[in-house]
Length: 325
Image 1 (cartoon, rainbow, N blue to C red):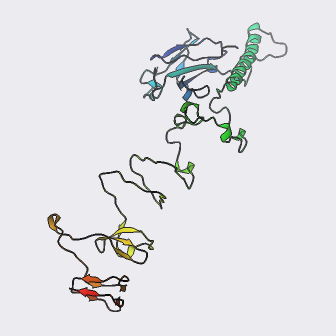
Image 2 (cartoon, rainbow, N blue to C red; image 1 turned 30 degrees about the vertical axis):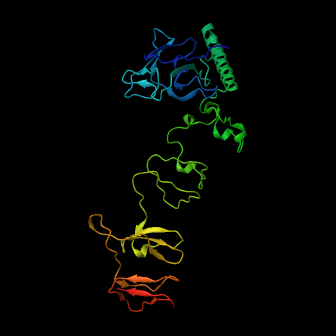
Image 3 (spheres, helix red, strand yellow; image 1 turned 90 degrees about the vertical axis):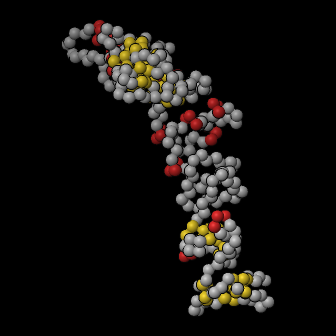
């Protein structure tokens, strides 16, 4: 197999040699890669970036020199463009110097009656030879799992052709899984790529703030392991939602917690209050603004005076009592 590329590793410098012949300097290409040799074949290249900022010296045609750059990259350091030994993400940096002979036109064109130079013939034949060598190596790379970026386009893959059976998986070895964390680009998975409904079987650990813009349903127990506090929904009396048994909120009109018991909204907890941590005073409102019926088999006590608004009724069932003190 003919040599059409060299893959030295970064050594902190800007000059690297290669060994393959070529027709034009523009046929020489360079790619920088994050390379992890501990991964299975086909997964060793963690990331890659094509580089055009390099020169080939006229006096040394089998050598590339990286140009200066304005800022550090994952693979290089500024300002000299030196290739890092280890990438920003902690992977060895590999340099792929390869040949990509252009097939658009032959190096020489012959006209009827013109002289034919051996060099022109050789260049034309070399172009064909180099292209065939590169295609052969590309096919061999594909056979061994080394399909490069953009080799297979989306339109070339039949609908539903790639299913779970075509993705390598392992229950214990992360490196033997087809899709792992290091194969997913940062910020590549957005809400648009997530299903409308996501079921999580197991434990979901959230570090930071989790914001739910709609309804979140938990079918199991919810444990809050914190020394902080839980902030409940709050609002005035008129903001009460349609009651569902078990709802709890803070009523800012009444300055109290309240819960829905299946029939009505009622005060939750509260107990006695007072200054400086005292628990002495039980406080209640002085005006009844809404029809109310005492809970069955319950009595009630209220500190007066009490005003019952016009048109409002307080119903005390038979056998029960409401005491105003």
